[in-house]
Amino acid sequence: MSKSVRIGVVLFGLLVTAGLGFRAMQDERMLSDGLRNAAALERSAENAAAALANLRASLHAYLAPGQGLAFWTTRANAHIDTLREQLLALDTALADSGGSLAEALDGVDQLTAAEKRARAYAERGDSLLAGDVIFTEVRDLLAAAEEQVAGARQYLRRGTEQRLAGVRWEQAALSLGAVALWVIIALVMLPVVPAAIKDPNEWRQNLAVALKKSASAPEETGELRRDLAVAASGREGGPVEPFVPVTALASVGEICSDLSTLSDVGALSGALERAADVLGASGVIVWVASNDGSTLSPVATHGFDARLVARIGMVARDSSNLTAMAFRDNAARVSAATASTPSAAVAVAMCGPSGPVGVLSAELRAGRHADDACVALATIFAAQLATLAGPVAAPKASPQAAAR
Image (cartoon, rainbow, N blue to C red; front, side, top):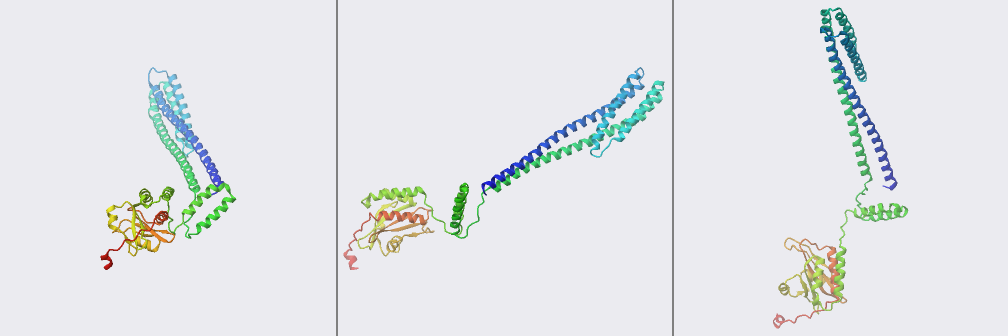
């Protein structure tokens, strides 16, 4: 993905995020307004309930002897006005959702008329008729109004809770949408790994195309380097190339430098020890051919017991072991690890101007394979050792051996 496309994707994400944030701010304001309106309606319902209770007490005072009728009449009218005002506020809120308190408002008008009749009876001193109005008609009207106020209060409370829950759900959805958007943008902007290249030579073609693109668009060099690395490492179906660490190559250089200063094969112990570490070998033997090339003798070893080397002795050229085969064929020979021989082995001929002059053989540690890298390193050591190796005189046959 080019740099301009990446910038465009990021800008698009920022714009969408800004829009979602603006909508979330609007929802927050709606949430605050809804809470304030809910509190105001709750106060109106409480005031209406209190006005009903105070109106009942004021009307009952009409019948109490020794009470000032004018005082309680004024209070009763004030409570009726308060009740009507609070019911109107609740009715307006209910109208938005299709509800109404028209019946309760009609009941307020009936309460007003009943209060006038009860007051008139009380002023004439007819307590019996006044009590009949207050304890029958007014009682029923007040009970109906209280029931309607309580119902409206519960209805408005449920409606407010539903609206606020919807706003909160929308805020959560906006947050999740913003997170999902940036997750998608991050996935889109991830570098695309090309499909596996089935043709082993196809990666070279991709390399040439990428180099042309790099020359025409220098700003994309960093991205192209990553593409080249993927193209070079994405090959499938071909053999795995052996890998030799740089530290191993440095050690090989030091060992070869030390070998070039030696003049005697007998002074190889330190160099062979380091060569064994580089090869991953548990033991190394340098074999030198006799003058007639018929036998091979161990002249320097590392990692093998001296008694074992003495028991092995010389190896005939026509033997069937790995060392003799490498000498006869003037080539490297390897032996893989098996159940009976858990260690792999490698033998490399040391070649001079006139042909093979010896063999470098190594028994590898358990788990170390005689791969191409190991053979290549052993070949380097063998080439350097060939400059030190000289022919060994062939042993004289005993009279008994000659007779046989």
